[in-house]
Image (cartoon, rainbow, N blue to C red; front, side, top):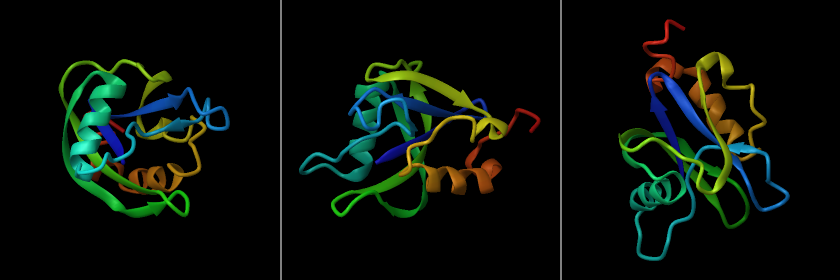
Amino acid sequence: MGAAIVSGGRLLTAQRAEPPHMAGGWELPGGKVDPGESDEDALVRECHEELAVKVRLERRVGGDWRLSDRALLRVWTARLVEGEPRALEHLALRWLTPAELYEVDWLPGDRPVIDVLAADAPAYGIGVGLGE
């Protein structure tokens, strides 16, 4: 699951620390669903564990993106409810404006999602209030 966290018209991205073949790549925060957990509950939990924030999920972005034979990526837009994101499990965090969306080296699984977000950034709150 992935969270397209938007605040102040900017999209939050996180730089992977591990595994080694993914380290340094950028992604939307999120993670795996535990047994008995809904996708939405898992995403809220993962944001808390990875970023020390509470988020409110808003709308689904696109459909399912296949990451492998066994993994799908599902993404929701999210708003911060409590806390300021901290990189607890990532190398770095970065807030991106619409003009900056392609300045980071996105992991291949996240790139199609970014393309969807970029194509209609204002509808997802990205760039809203920034004058872009």
